[in-house]
Length: 85
Image (spheres, rainbow, N blue to C red):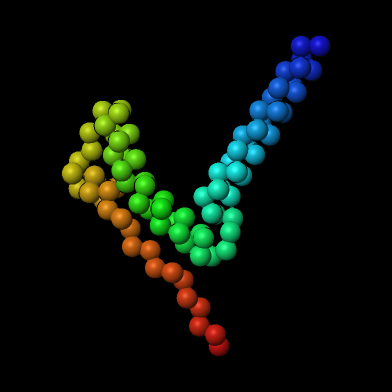
């Protein structure tokens, strides 16, 4: 009896996590068209460097200055273009 309940709880947990990930991706605009994805990428690029710095302070991680600058710099991402032949 307990083994069956444990299996149901494990399955329900996995479904909940997968559903939550899908909801977050949809809410962030990752599942929309290209324009929504581009906006979501811009928000992510703006949010990740401060979050990395905050977690480095939280865990008291010391990083060399050169590496720290490369982590905090916003990468230059150019859109892919395809030439019609």
